[in-house]
Length: 167
Image (cartoon, rainbow, N blue to C red; front, side):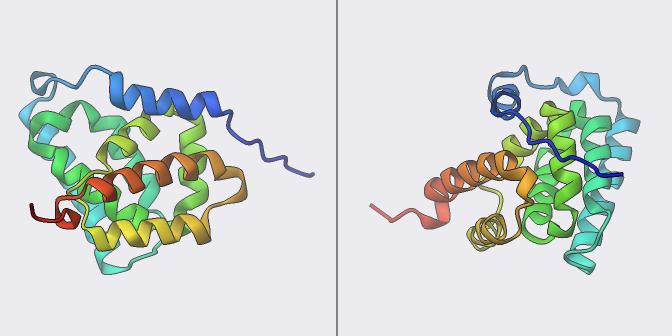
C-alpha cells in the first residue's frame, strides 16, 4: 500500500498565523491554579528532555499535547515557559519535524501558538540555529510550515534586542 503525502494548503498556514496574531488572548481566569501547575510540569518535561538529549524523539508530541491542553494558561505566567519550549524544540528537536508538520496541518491553532511563542526570549544563537535547521531539515511535505517558521524567526532575529545597535 502506497501512502500519499499531501502538502498543506497555504491558506491553512495563513490561518494559523492569523490566529496567533489576531486571536483573542487566553484569559488567566480560564486556567485554574491546578491546571497552571500541571501545565508548568508538562512544559518542564519537554524542556528538560530537550536539554538532556537534544534531537531526541517524542518531544514534539509532548509539546503539542501541552499546547492543546494548556494554551488557555498562557497568560498565567506560563508564556515564557511555552516560549522556551518552542525555541528549544525548533532549535534541537528536528527529529520530530514530521510530527510537527502533521500537527500544523491538522491544527492551525497550534501552529499559530508556536509562531506567537517564537519570540525575542529565544537567544539570537538559537534563532540562527533554527534558521539553519529550517534550511537543512525541513520535511518536503512541510515546506509551508517551514516557510512560516522561517519568516517568523527572521523577523524576531531582525528585531532582537541583543542584535540592536546602540544609538
